Amino acid sequence: MKILVSGTAGGAGWPEPGCRCASCAALPSGHRRPFELVVDGVARFPFDDPPSGYRACAGGLGLAGPDGSRLLCLPRGRPVPVDGPARYDVVLIDLLDRPERLGELRRAGLADDRTVVVAVGLDHRVRSEEELARRLRLWGALAVPDGTVLETGRALPGTAIGEWPGDSNARPATAWRTLLLGGSRSGKSAEAELRLAAEPYVTYVATGPSGAGDGEWAARVRAHRERRPAHWATVETADLVSAIGQATAPLLIDGLGTWLTAVFDEHGAWEGDRAPVRERCDELVAAWRRTPVRLVAVSDEVGMGVVPATSSGRSFRDALGRLNERLAAESEYVALVVAGRLLEL
Image (cartoon, rainbow, N blue to C red; front, side, top):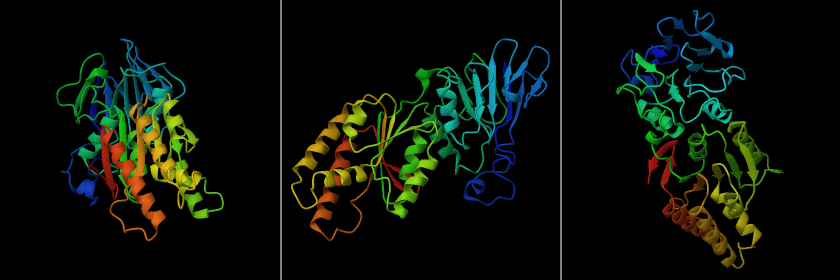
């Protein structure tokens, strides 16, 4: 099956004519043309009435070819199909629209390590080609230039952006432990969620209170829940050592600041003995070091604010700062998130 991707952008192209946003303004006119797809020169997407020898599936979003190859195209706003083949060889998907749809495909077995995943529908929802490439590396997908021909069973031409994902050994190594630091409303939680968006199984570990009796905090918790992919599991606990040790899927821990607050509360350490807090931090660092699964954790950067006015506040700041430093030393990837932008450390 030869798949000609004549255009890789959204319906208006990228840049969008007349748009002066930062993303569009940085690109030359016609950089990426509106999405267009033709298979073997005879079957054009959507596959409503394919020629003899081809079979449409997934409501016209999928196509099975005479050679047995199977293709799925998942545009913006379309849910993951529940009918069709058990697995696809090539998936063309708008990953800027709910990238967790790729996680759903993988969870259902419709896409696996041998599936070629190509991002299409590209537009100014991402600020640059560089940011697009960064996200696709995290998601195990790639982008190709307009006019690329994908041929099932063969590697992409050298003009492809990124590595050929059909060979799992060619994919960039993924950080086993990731620590994301940032101030309040910096975008650190959104970045953590983005990093795991395309995973088939994720457990979100919420360490903070539920917000009962505090309307403002409850609204924050609700916003986080609504933003997370529906197929993720959620665990609310301050026992991070057990959560890490018993995990069988990647964990997103949000966050270490609220966890440490709970530890201070549990041991009465705000005004009392803080030795138990140090022991709990030692246990967490040890669990982080020997984790059996990928970890992405969010923590507050406390070293750039005002000095707390109370002794207990200063003790908490110092304890969280030391914990951040120790976990960073045990992590493959550490970044500071400022105004939604990453600064790798």
